[in-house]
Amino acid sequence: MLLPVLFGRLKAAVVGVVHVGALPGTPRSSLPLTQIIDQACQEAEVYKDAGVDGLIVENMHDLPYTVCPGPEVTTAMTVISAALRRTCPHLALGVQILCAANQQAIAVALAAGLDFIRAEGFVFSHVADEGIINACAGNLLRYRKQVGAENIQIFADIKKKHSAHALTADVSVAQTASAAELFLADGVVLTGTATGLPTDPQELKEVKDAVKIPVLIGSGVTLENVRNYLDANALIIGSYFKKEGYWANAVDPDRVKKFMEHAAHFCGTQSQRQCKTNSPKACVMYSLL
Image 1 (cartoon, rainbow, N blue to C red):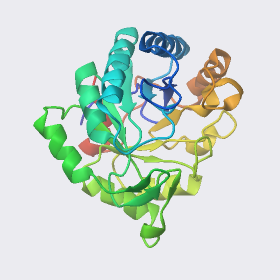
Image 2: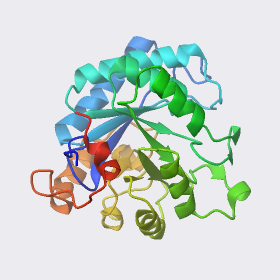
Image 3: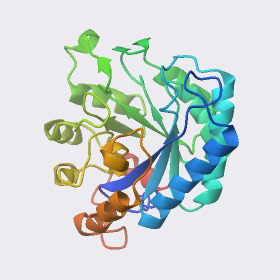
Image 4: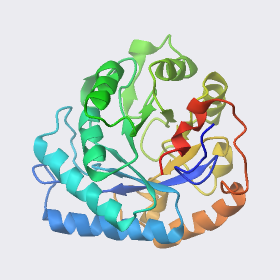
């Protein structure tokens, strides 16, 4: 059994989101890369000071997304991620590159010394805003192997937000999670139907019952509803931590601090709790640092 250290908590670890400014070459790009890096590091400092368990960096301002982001995006995300690693040397850090640029995310994580990626379209196909996203698990895990990045964990979205799932209407969310587990995902991410909208607590229960790998909540967690998600292994919180609770705004230090003060009462730290599972796979997310 591996010791829990990735996020510092056995359950309901808190992962803040750094939404970097629109990157060079994207439609809304207006800032030099140096300023984007400075802003990202400032937000990371806010999260770190508030005591979050981890961070994930995303290029969410690169609207509209493309399924084939150019090398300028991958390069910029690498530089930003490396800066965040220097800013937060002891936090668990991850990256997501929209849209579904999962191999690029592995490359960024490897170069910048990050711990995990969030992957879209890991198993099954769905129709997203950007078009049809096909399953990538086979190619992604082979790429991770080829570049020597097996220490980087892959947390896979299932039935993800901003997507239509008519193609897989006969496959339940629990079955999708089981397929991701079979295809060697290190964890699965549950979301609501759109950014900032809450995840269905019943789906959390169904997925927790179906798999032994970690289950993360990827949207809609607030101070008011967090008790619905305490059985999750981690809570990825973006919108609620922003000013007025809107994802595109700057991080609100007061919101983060207040949430983390309450989080101390929600669940114990790794020194206060013991892992109750006998599955090495279920504990692997805690073994990185």
